[in-house]
Length: 397
Length: 238
Ligand SMILES: Nc1ncnc2c1ncn2[C@@H]1O[C@H](COP(=O)(O)OP(=O)(O)OP(=O)(O)O)[C@@H](O)[C@H]1O
Ligand SMILES: [Mg+2]
Image (cartoon, rainbow over the protein chains, first blue to last red):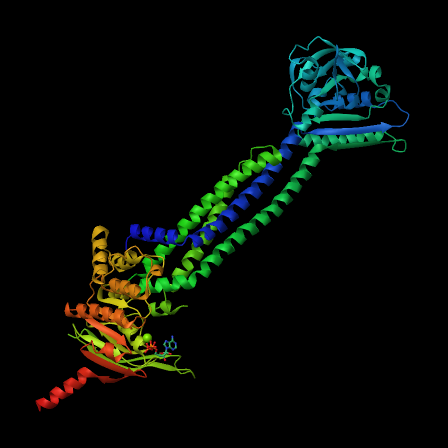
């Protein structure tokens, strides 16, 4: 019997045993799709977390320092950071106030006003699209200038030019000198927080919020790289412990990088757990395949006995069954991959608003696993029964 | 040359155990080309066991079996398949059709394993189905046919490759007497065309269609019409 015949025979058997074919395929499809979906969604989630933190800025150190009845440490901290110029790219206060921002009759509600230094932009990972940053001189001279975020600009000016215009912050006129690029995509909840902002020289906070002015306690230090971050944290901690009497105040130095680390750790755990669940799904699918194959063993053993009795060689029988289960498993695997990709795309969009593409290697790996199981349990009855004397195979009930 | 030569064959199940069964207990039998032999005996006497060994579907526990001078015990599994395909057509006690294939496909099966392709295979299968009067039932599945029709498909499958030997195990067992007669007519026709027919039955009347009757009881041959005829001949010769 040649290969073409073996193929024809296999397809006939596949077509005439529809229930068996469909159940076997279903086991493979569910297993493969489950693995792809679960693993991809975890990867997507990890990616979205990492992207979120990266937008926030890496190598960013947050410093909180406060001392009862003392002037803010901001100037001293600023000078100290300048001395660390081999480690540090910038430093800025990061206090904010919540107040009315207007341009002519237009009111921008929900706008955050930040008190920053000339290094606010670099510290908080913004980019200018127009105009200039706040300058060192602006800080020194209490200049009433500001840089505004993309959403703030849109709310106040729409598409009109903003540079040089005067806006009113809590009734105090400020001149717009720069506009930031949009940081988060429109509609993203982060955008309402981080793009609807106005940054003013921190020294001018005394016009706006006297409490904030004298109690400036939140700072951001931007380090050069992750090694510098660790080093700078040590130095800053040392510096602050000499400056702040912990009986009368407190300080804290930390980096969001540590959060990225720990959140990576969490998502690794999550992927392992979900990967485990997916593995179980694959196994259950595999057991389903085995089950349906073993249920049909008796029926097939008789069939094999008949085929042998009328002259089939062992090899022809095994190749027929191999092709049969190979085709079923392969098609099942392909449908499983297709279903997995489709559902991953849909769920990724719905859950994370992201286009998640499953990993190719993983998809192929999951499909291979099911195909191998399908083939092993497909040829199992053939290998066993074709070795029997025909009369024994025929007798099987 | 003898077509079939069985020498002192035993088939013993569960040997040396309490439930030992000697299905064949020292059987010797010769069959010539072109004979029509009926093997008769009551239920459980060992008829099917003997046919399975003659048809190379089973191996004897002890003893030798030569088919066309070849010692069957010495053949490999795939050589045995070839022998079954080329030399023997089986008609089983149960019809043993493949339920997922229609009548024509069932009949084509031995031709496929013979390596016959395309239109020639189709013609040969149709020819065989015509001989059993089923040319109008070719696309029916086994489950859509009566017992007699299924048995005739089984006959068509057995004769499709024009094998020199036809072995039929109770071919009329499940059929009414009229259909049974029809099946016997087909077998007689094959005999007239030169095939060697080995027919197994417990029915003496059916056995009367055969030219030679071998009676088996508890795994032993107790009566062989040919040998008795031979004895008569030698007796008259003296
Ligand atoms: N696999 C087996 N294991 C044990 N005993 C067996 C086996 N196959 C057959 N036998 C025994 O061998 C004996 C002969 O069986 P066989 O099938 O040849 O009888 P038979 O003459 O064909 O009977 P029937 O007319 O009912 O078909 C019986 O006693 C049966 O129980
Ligand atoms: Mg029997």
